Image (tube, rainbow, N blue to C red; front, side, top):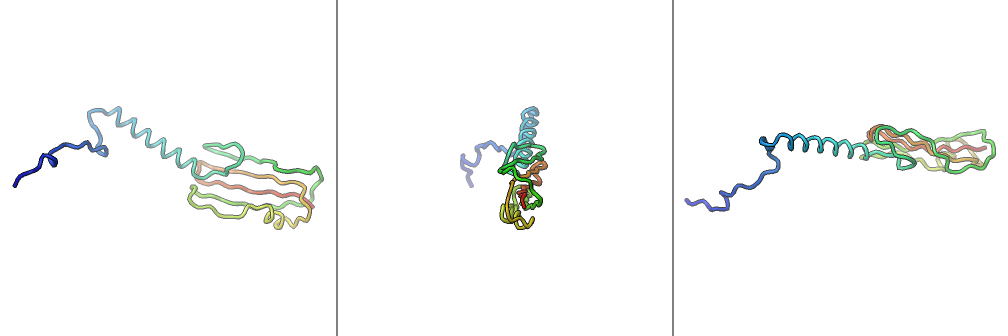
Length: 127
């Protein structure tokens, strides 16, 4: 039985660690770890305002009339690892939750922790 020259060719196997150059292997491992961390951080995000890679907790005013408010309603949506997003953060639901007839201001609250958990809430104030 003869063996073809094609099967004798030594193909480079990128998945096998190169033991001669340990520095290159370490750098590859560090790069892989950092890219995994970056992907996980950017997965779950509120999408509004400034984006914090490690932590985000802010309140952003969207609309205000200057009239004093007596009631407040909140509606939230949440994201887990950027894979699952649940909730309704609409102004209508926020208004309904606060039993508000006349809206005087709308604010967005954002929260993000390491891209693992993110939350966006609509806060409606009015009478």
